[in-house]
Length: 231
Ligand SMILES: [Zn+2]
Image (cartoon, rainbow, N blue to C red; front, side, top):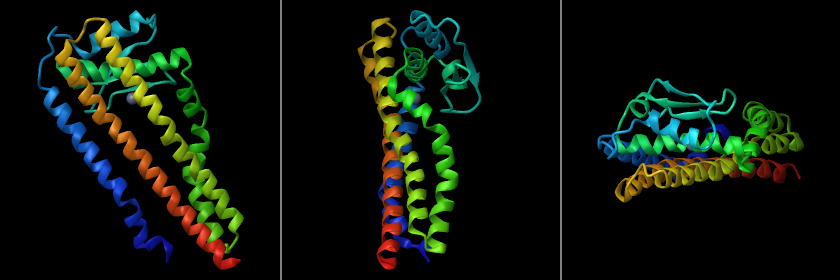
């Protein structure tokens, strides 16, 4: 049966290994630079507020959220949420992570196209991840190749989402490092350290894309195999 196919795991193994490596790198760099106090003794919350204000985003609040590495920008509520170690922390890593999240708020404000596209396809992605599988499985079970291909197409929206995530994340980090430098918040050493943290985080999104592409290729191979048998 295809759902016990060991090839599926062989197919996805490179992505899983890359994901584990990326997550280890994030933990390692944040663990290291999360312990080193930053030169100016600023908290992540102070830095996020300063960058937002400098960009005229006075109405976007900076809130604290529980957990570790839970930092994010909420585009629906227009809120920057920082994890406790970043919000209250005065470490080197807190600066970069806080600045990165303000990068997303600024992207939103400026109508940054990859972010807009990614937000626009969210309903299709939600539909695709739920209904895509069902259509592929149903198509295979009842032998209707067209239905299975439609499922693959819906499922591909998730891959597109992972693809659009890359420019969104790289751009937010680029904005973060630029703001930290031009506002005189970091020195050269702290800039390099923050680049290390943000690059590690970016690698998790690269791994996510590799997984999404391999997943899609797997299902394309399954459905095209089915089509060959039925032809
Ligand atoms: Zn981000």
